[in-house]
Amino acid sequence: MMPTHLLYLHGFRSSPQSVKARLMAQHMAAQHPDIHWWCPQLPPSPREAMDMLLAGVKDWPRASMAVVGSSLGGFYATYVAEQMGCRAALLNPAVDPARDLAKYIGEQSSWHDADERFFFKPEFIQELRDLTLTGLSQPDRYFALIAKGDEVLDWREMTGRYAGAPIELLEGGDHAISDFEAHLPSVLSFLGLN
Image (cartoon, rainbow, N blue to C red; front, side, top):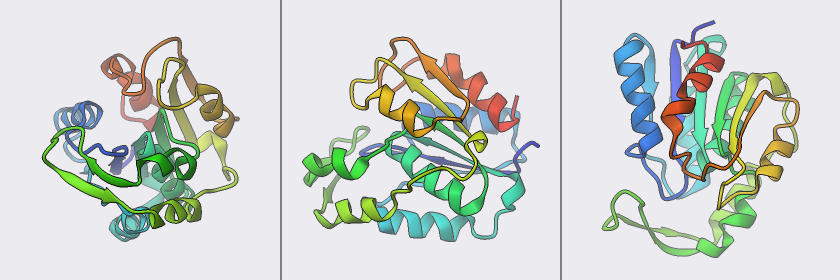
């Protein structure tokens, strides 16, 4: 079933201006202008981010909504998909951000605008722990695009986390999936958007 609503979640220190988010937005505008597209700027607080997301999608039709998430956005997308019972496509998804982001406590800048700064607070680590799920209720509702060359996250951890889900494992690549345009058809196909 083709989705009627699509949510895109960017990663840590990222924004709706990321290359992947813009590519998806351009494709949706050109090929699927009738589909409701939402790609919000996520607040630094994981609890605030999730409250905003779940409030934003609460009236979306569960059977025809989907979510795409990159890195930390993939972690959030998994939580949203489990709450809503919808499909999710994950791009180098974070598996244990509470562990991985502990070293980023303090002032941070955005990747896309160095002047845009935010403070990553110590309590955000517990907020991430609170969003950590133990398993997937239906692995076949997930698709993971994972690069072995990811310099930030371990591809073995990612493939283990999404065991049982369709996975496209890229030889090489990087955390940003710099050649995302080449893999966009796989993501769209899983979502029923080709």
